[in-house]
Length: 425
Ligand SMILES: Cc1cc2nc3c(=O)[nH]c(=O)nc-3n(C[C@H](O)[C@H](O)[C@H](O)COP(=O)(O)OP(=O)(O)OC[C@H]3O[C@@H](n4cnc5c(N)ncnc54)[C@H](O)[C@@H]3O)c2cc1C
Image (cartoon, rainbow, N blue to C red):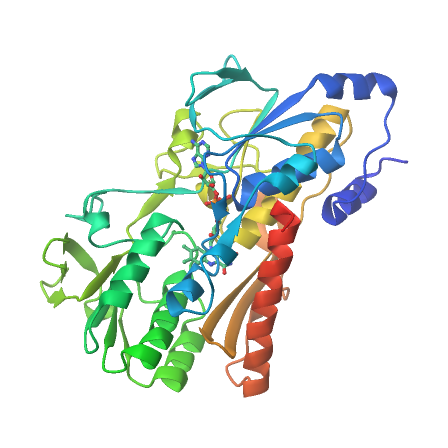
């Protein structure tokens, strides 16, 4: 094979070919070890695609969970439209692809000696390190909201025990109660996620607790697909959902989890029956340990490869990164994982890095037959990520019922396809 930039990129996007190389380069690559921290959307993608591009390279994935539970579709679980089991994905598919999966937590990174320390105490060496640890909550950034408070007023912004807690609370809430959600300013994981959650909780209330209210208290005035959400909420749920942005005294500054009460910047108090606080976030702690975060708490990366701007040889993906205009989404993390895998494979195989291209689509469900979406394609220009002009957009405001129903089905197909692409099922 002639290794031009174009055909390497073709391999990267299709994910289906191995690069033919002189045996001396293959022998060097064969000795190489890539460690990937985090078996979610970004990390599991990078591990799988590295094995495809460079089967000679040893790939170890470090992830504490035996089964990864996706945030995507966790709002549908709250609505009663998805089972809990359908959100979980094991790692046998990655093992079958030749990835060595270690169920442990990465505790520390030494970039100078290129080693990683695991929770069991083992210290492993790497030639390239990929970090895709997702987000951590900034406890106490919102007065009164710490980890203990999240046991009473769950964030449910990492899928798992928190999601199940919120589900139980919604089930136990009496009809006529109020569900209050606190929404942070940008940047945060999944820009349309809170607004889809409001719709999914409304769907559940409409079936089981129709006298209940939903109050959204938002630290900003604009949000992803705003006009479409406002239109869809009204059409599907009438006045059940009330949204207040920054200019309407929506910014919460204090949380009293014990009393299930919040206070806004102007001193208005809201009492909840169920309180869902989504706090400000930052990159998962291992990124800070690796020295790749900046003062913002997020990770600056090179747009072409998602290699850290601060530490060579460490690639960071997904929610942990500063990748605007790309959103912090699972789809974005997946395409970043593919680009990083192609760049790492090229480095280790001694070829030129391919030209990167990224994409995103975020589907949101408003009701079982009512879906909306936002999409974009991204490339690099002068070392920065840009959205390709004319590449994306949002669903039309004047979409018909048939169009909305089709988008709901596309969302389901997206979930099945990306799960198979990453975990194999
Ligand atoms: C309610 C909700 C709905 C969403 N819906 C959508 C959607 O419809 N479409 C979409 O594209 N995105 C959606 N998202 C966003 C999506 O979940 C994230 O953008 C995506 O998970 C980011 O991928 P990631 O690889 O950065 O992190 P994650 O997928 O969270 O993976 C991080 C992994 O790293 C592991 N980890 C962390 N630290 C360590 C460590 N020290 N050692 C070992 N492992 C570690 C964690 O256990 C975790 O498995 C949604 C998010 C939410 C909250």
